[in-house]
Amino acid sequence: MELITDRLVINKFTESDKEPWWQIEKNFEVRKYINQKPLSRVEAANYVSAAIESYVINGYGRYAVRDIANLKLIGMCGFLLDEMGIDFGYRYCPNSWGKGIAYEAAKEVFQFGTKTLGLSPIVAGVHPKNVASEKILKKLGFQFKSKVNFMDQKFLKYEFH
Ligand SMILES: CC(C)(COP(=O)(O)OP(=O)(O)OC[C@H]1O[C@@H](n2cnc3c(N)ncnc32)[C@H](O)[C@@H]1OP(=O)(O)O)[C@@H](O)C(=O)NCCC(=O)NCCS
Image (cartoon, rainbow, N blue to C red; front, top):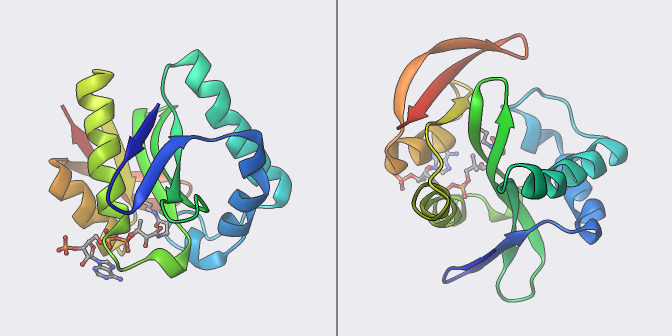
């Protein structure tokens, strides 16, 4: 799996992404609208391991998003099987925010998931204050379903069929 956009290369996480992933997820700002808990080095490594396992078990997973200029890991976008179903999610290092990067990747990965892999339905949970994230879901065609309790907070649940 490899997707190329104007500014990005999107492919599978590998073992060597564990350390750079921790550099992203140890930042409170990145976790602010998730659970406000920066990841430890071990937790970040486990996240990458779970993505790699998911490619094998489910045929999809969270994917690494890299800067096309130097292949540096800048974030992730992809699918995760959890208790709510197939979740679509994304997270990026703060210096890539506000440039249309998240939507550029989301459009490509979402099309890959729905058209190439045939995934459906797909769910997404977003913190009510996470305006940028909610905009991305709406632009992809997600519909608001309900308010749900997630990690002791109220989240907005979106679905795509
Ligand atoms: C949420 C996140 C993925 C957005 O990434 P991004 O690259 O800045 O998003 P984009 O530049 O593609 O912008 C998407 C839309 O949100 C808007 N937007 C971007 N930042 C915004 C902000 N701070 N406030 C309001 N709108 C914002 C953009 O203008 C764009 O809207 P448009 O389509 O109307 O032009 C990024 O901030 C992030 O990684 N946050 C931490 C992790 C996280 O919260 N992930 C999502 C969990 S549900």
